[in-house]
Length: 510
Image (cartoon, rainbow, N blue to C red; front, side):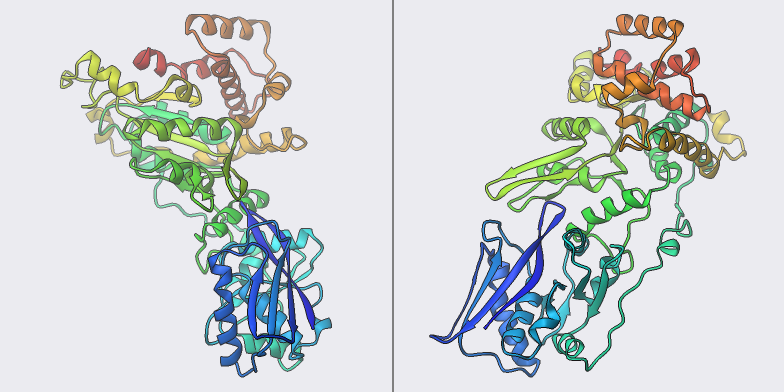
């Protein structure tokens, strides 16, 4: 007898339909799985065989062939345990074959028949839904995550026995339903760090506000103890709220990576990732034998914080150039090519020299050669991609001793959200959300300049020896500054402030 069960597999962070065909026929007893299964899929044979026996069913002593179609794509992981088990139980008439039609199955099965959660359930269910499947059977622990796909009827099961009873009408399992309005509220929008705790450094706080409003990359340079890390850690508290679409994109990435907690089925705040400077190339951009998302993809729609930038391996930093430009990472392996999104904001901090005091204090005893070698770890092309470059000077005693709270993150965020709303309305037909994502053609359309403004930026271009990329960055930053001011037109003050935020490479690098 032959049965066909709908299941799925992943390519990158996207799911696609896999038809699990199970055939039981007379002949020498054996159990074969074909269709390019990896080791974890091949081991399903023993898990499924033992789970069926321990659940009280008779495992057929016949020739069992399982085909995972399409047969030309690699199948990985334990998610095929449940569809294979259901296919076998359907073939031996424990479950009626008609009842499993057009239903998606995914889940790992333990030896005692428990249905265990798997990684990547959200993209699997989303891929099934896009292919017309309206109902799925998944592990109970994955049910809330799967229910994020609107329109999909999600049945969460605990055991193989419970699944059989459900299809045979012996047990009623209500679908898992999520209250999307409550789930995506701002109730949990709380951050431990607040800009109210920061004394002085008004120019850096202003630069961070501009960066947050347009999701621009930012580099903060200054001596030790100036508050570079302290202020950057407060950046998430002023970032614009996620849209539901952005949240789903992030959740899919974290689901594939196995980083979603049991009670955190939807990522509701922008990611803030801060990898150590010893990170490898593959951990930063993604990779491995079976490619997995790296830090640049885990920071998608959020912030990647690189503290002490020159301490990172230069090869790792150079790997960032393509993701920052293309906003995606493409990884090629023998088994295929996978693409992961990387629409992120980079926030970096650094000292101006090995001791940290060059240009700020007489404490510095670094030679000119040592300073150049230290700063030379950051290439010109990478520096070009850091839109905003701002200087954090040492805080003086007067600023520290004043017992007055600075402007809070909540107040700054109001201005950021207002600027974000302007951008959302402006780009509603462009498939982008922030000024930082503007293409060259879109810059021409949305960053029009008057005669005076064009003259100012022309002088800056020639005097500072800017690249074409730096020129476009200044226009994007000017657009964000104008949005923060509520101005439709980019005027002289916006251009001038944007140019000031591109000055540090000239002072320290050139």
